Length: 131
Ligand SMILES: [Zn+2]
Image (cartoon, rainbow, N blue to C red; front, side):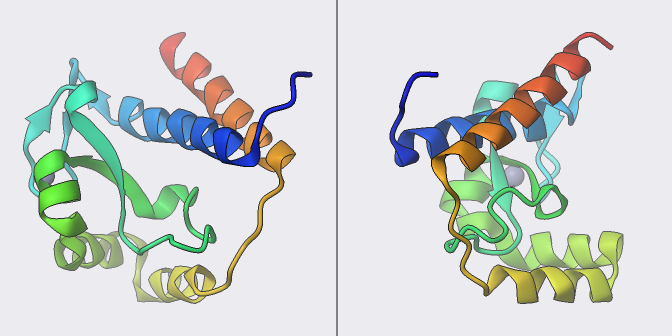
């Protein structure tokens, strides 16, 4: 296996994860923004976090990552208030609080773990496409 740097492995893992988040929410070629309800194409959407994932703990947590348009994700700084409100309604306060607690614990991934995440989501994407 070719050696790659950890930051490159992280980026590739995120790319696969982000693509899966968006692709799995696609309906008829368009994806709905979780926080404003606008429909956009895959390329115009990004994957946004309901809880800041600066220390990795919730970076790849499917429960709190949803498709967002650039208006919300970048210019609206994630629209955390709408995002959190909707998620709490979906998941319940208990689950949301668990994820919040988890988000405060720093997690260190090794390069191979990023590669496993990349593979996991590439496999999921393949299964999605073949449906
Ligand atoms: Zn939006």
